[in-house]
Image 1 (tube, rainbow, N blue to C red):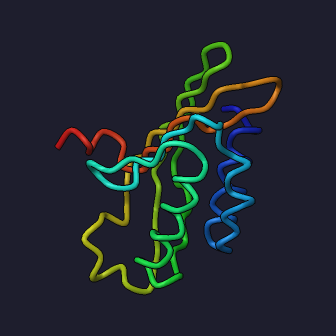
Image 2 (tube, helix red, strand yellow):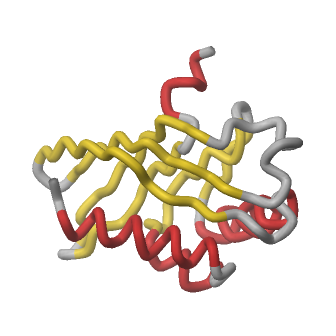
Length: 128
């Protein structure tokens, strides 16, 4: 397991919890894609920031993401992360979205820095 990427994911989760969205963008490449919900993607840092602000509002500014079991597959400058992603929020019982997900993240090493290029907390459930 790439400990540097694991730590980056933990720090990104902390930035989401603390709603430090400008700091959160440091974890993404300029051309990153965030799956906001099935059928809706945010492309690029500005759109990703807007999406996280809307996600925070949807969860009444109480979303707490954490990662459970995690597997990483590394090939050269790319890492595929398969992760059990758990969400907690004040309105989790009324949310139409799953609070336990099998996420897929893709990281790319650019100039010695790991950056998230695909953030898909829904994982393969997008196929459903």
